[in-house]
Image 1 (cartoon, one colour):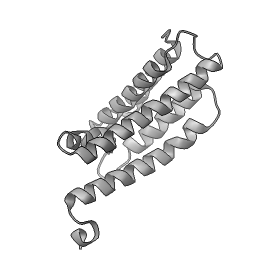
Image 2 (spheres, rainbow, N blue to C red):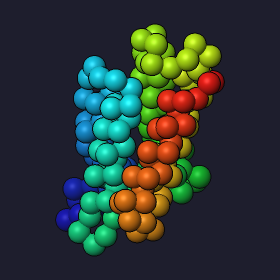
Image 3 (tube, rainbow, N blue to C red):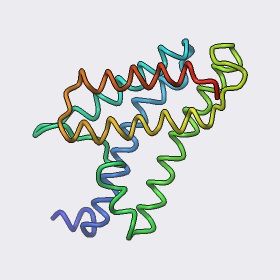
Image 4 (tube, helix red, strand yellow):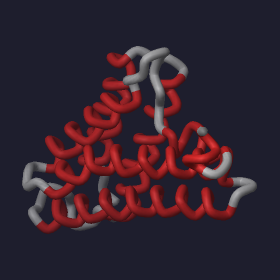
Length: 156
């Protein structure tokens, strides 16, 4: 009956990955769109990510994109396109947030929104992997705080 509903394991995997992306994206979209100071926005984004990554019935689930889909992307062009779309979308959302903060004077004129976005995304990826390794939330939050300090204090 599983194959009757989804076709095959690959289709089930792709549909599961798409559902995860939709759910995780919905949790983040509002935070990216809402008007608030940069530090507060970043803190809320990372807190939401940790809530997702540390959930799970049998232990922390991490991030589907970083933990499993990235491995599958090597050999599957459709999954690779989905992973790249997710990574690019996150970079763009962060870049927009840094651009707005720069326009408001929350960042120095020399700040590079795209470079900061890549650091912000890399921090998301790092806490996803570390959450799967069962690094305690307090340690993950310390990493996040340090990364935010670096990004906000970054001179470009």
